[in-house]
Image (cartoon, rainbow, N blue to C red; front, side, top):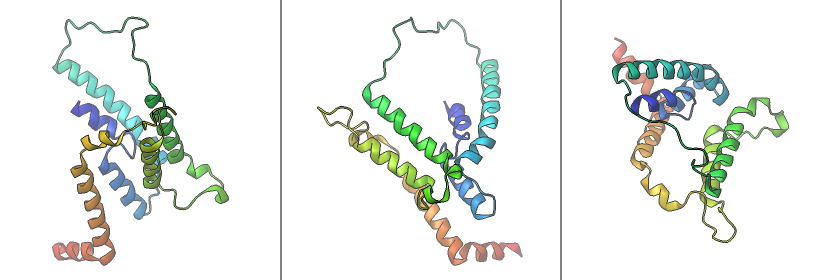
Length: 179
């Protein structure tokens, strides 16, 4: 699971918090990096890493005596919440990938990756799965199991890094170690 998370997390800019940090840093330092550019570079690399990981793991831990497969007609069915989630995710990915293709009048300046993610989250928390129950695709109770401490840690680290960069503190610290 750890290898799969690491390998899969490198494929997109939202796959892992360090990816977003790296994309922001690259953009601030003259290398334009959006969702599509990241995916064009990292997805083939992640595919190669996945194949290598499978080969290495199967070599280290051979599989014996496991029956695979699901009988026909016995697979899981997607419920309304799953279809809503899939639709919102596909729309978010489309918004992350297509902005370079939008004409100037149709390109909102505030529609950055974080805003798109926030809109997707609000949609999942508010769009009901049916008109009778008004239960959202992602009930608020499900968010209680999220690792909020990790999100706050990364968000706080990004805010601190931005403040240090703007005030010149990071440059001063770097210069103090240069000697």
